[in-house]
Image 1 (tube, one colour):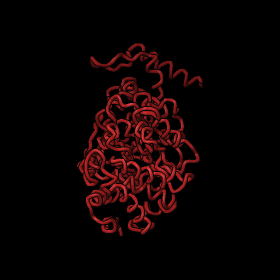
Image 2: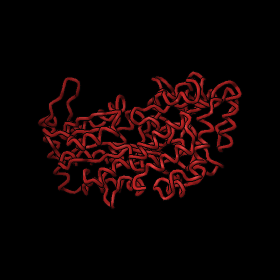
Image 3: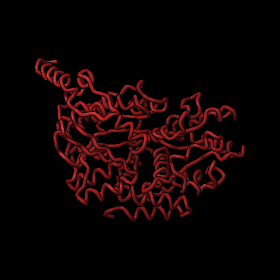
Image 4: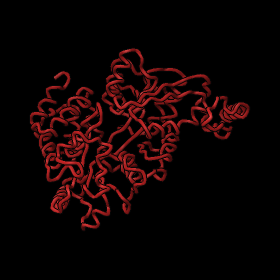
Length: 443
């Protein structure tokens, strides 16, 4: 460390020692010591400032975020005001249009982030934050928040969506093996159905975002059937949404999700999934009323308290197989932090969120996945998180981002989600695909 940096750190520690970091504490917080505050010296002191954060994360997820940045907030003097909203995708637009944009927003859809960036609403990343982003994440991950060559957001959360949750005991008791090909998966599906148990359970209700679990299914299967090149063309609308290859993928998914013999275990007929909250959709696995549930790594947070996660526990995962054992691409998603304001305290908060320190600290508090190169998989809260991080860090993994999140928001978070619900309700594949194609902006 250079002399100037050592001197700055020493001054910060002396200030924190004299003032306990100068931040008033409520009765539920502990006083931060000089040692506590030393890791945050590089973010500077911003006493009396406030940063508002708006996101879709609520309940325990929100609590874990706030717990993770509590020391940062106290040591820098920044009052971080967090608001989680289940209707984020709709209300963030209303807030910005109404002149009440938050300082920082966590965007689950790069397509939505890009809309605000193109409109000039978002602030480009500072040089410091952009440097951290380029150091911490691959060019591919940074490209998702890049608009017209300018980086507007940093990856905050990552997930792997190509997982199938199952009960190891259920499989073991019935002599079932984890499938490694699509043919083997359908063989397991048929064997479970023949035993009198509906093999798949699903739920797609998610407030304004209802329908996204079905779109994940379609994207995952298209990626496996047609490969990354066709998938990329479809997402970018270089081939139409209703291309015959997309129709094939939808029909393949329909052979599982729209078949009463195979779905919806623990809840009722296949169509019942339209009214089942995605948070509850996998729980019939625990009672043996369902064998498998296609859902992302973040579903680890939705299991009832006390549920063991691991290869010899109550639930575990396998990667959705492809046509052969060698074809196993990974579909995933993520959340990106972007700012509507450009003030020193906002930049400091963004810099902290972009650091590997934040990602590792968050992982130690509960289920969480990051694609940051500085993340240690050993810090993962569950074996599923560890597997997800290993897949994301493996250079051999053919990763693709959630297609609906990359598409224009009016399609990906609009007509595609709605069309997926109509499709589960009985509308034909061709009708739904044609309708979504007609909705594409500029068509």
